[in-house]
Length: 178
Image 1 (tube, one colour):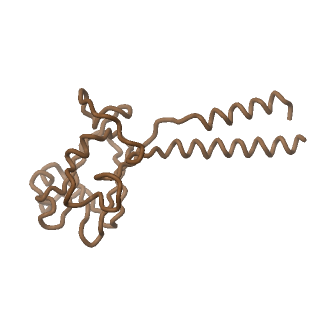
Image 2 (tube, rainbow, N blue to C red; image 1 turned 90 degrees about the horizontal axis):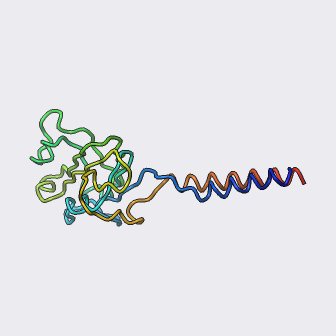
Image 3 (cartoon, one colour; image 1 turned 180 degrees about the vertical axis):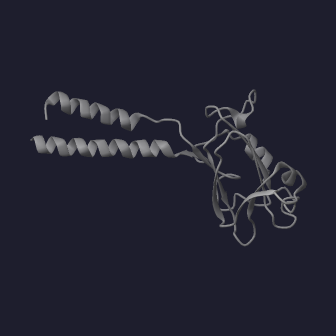
């Protein structure tokens, strides 16, 4: 391999390692910890401190035998009654549920266990279509961006692995040329 080609491969590899595109974030509902989805968290306050954009995901962590997650209509959210036909859009009950938020809109979640929703175990998430940093899709709010411990960017890890693969290929090419 010519020195100029080797330099080009090295430069591309370094750029790939440094490039950190904006990507979907994952939010542990209620904060980090094994029981973020519980009866002791103020989810309205928690959600207002986040910046959700289309493609992000919520991670619901809870004790499986004590809670569940129902994605519901706004009416079911407000009344804490998921029994009317068409009120439940999705159900989750593994204790470690990952829910992707694909569209810019408001998503409504409750715990369907009796008295949990009425007791405050409900979450409304406003998702924007814009760039990260638009607080909860509500312009004009001065809310800091989420901490790295709560929102992790998967695409930056993927990019780093891609850069390592390019470095490995460059190494093989250099060894074959030499």
